[in-house]
Length: 287
Ligand code: ATR
Image (cartoon, rainbow, N blue to C red; front, side, top):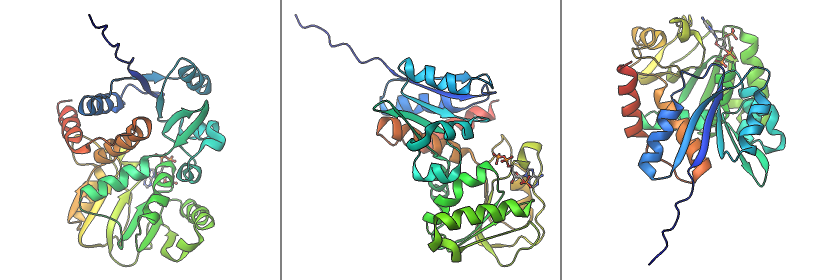
């Protein structure tokens, strides 16, 4: 008689935020698990605002394998990671992925790679393209370096508060002096030329508003991309279409892409995004 081999206990993952009930991450990671055959559990943890750090420490002390971090804790997770930050995470000032190696906390920001993965999926690789990034908050910070590293010919950052765009440009220039000639920043209302890829990284879509950008001009076949997503076209997508964008997209693919990169960091396997994105869009459409 052979003794049955016990299958290993599923690895434990979670997303930490406050609030966190809206998070799609458990759905996405369950779908990745089914697709790859990697057994895991993935839960939502609503951390008290004054106990985020203790929540993270307890999760790993109890054998957790990896955490995603969402609003409002991405900067505090960055501060916790210290020497364990990846290069992109250090510059982004915020992280969404935590894990441990030899007992040391490691952290990465997968938003930028998630965005690039989605732009390529949509046939809008930023390489040699003129890219306009709207916004200079946390969402914008996470994607600037990956966009530059992807080889865009020019990256122009505009923001309602123009000084924040300038500060972001300066921080990037210190980090990547070679990129200075491809990088500029300014207010929303002083634009020249046509843009191939226009990315909305402001939070205005949450209020169903589009940033006011007089003078926005799209190149032929340009893509307007909203990092935000909703069951219907977002305010920015509607604005961009009316302003002449040939193609528009919301950020659901980026959400799935950043989750896929987290999954790869934790499990060493890159899942296929497309079927999961289709299922997620269906789930959102069904409410
Ligand atoms: P997040 O982490 O989501 O990026 P944030 O750091 O508060 O949040 O940044 C919000 C971004 O959206 C900022 O760039 C903000 O512009 P300001 O720096 O001028 O505040 C931008 N934003 C929010 N609402 C906007 C609106 N109605 N029009 C234009 N920009 C807006």
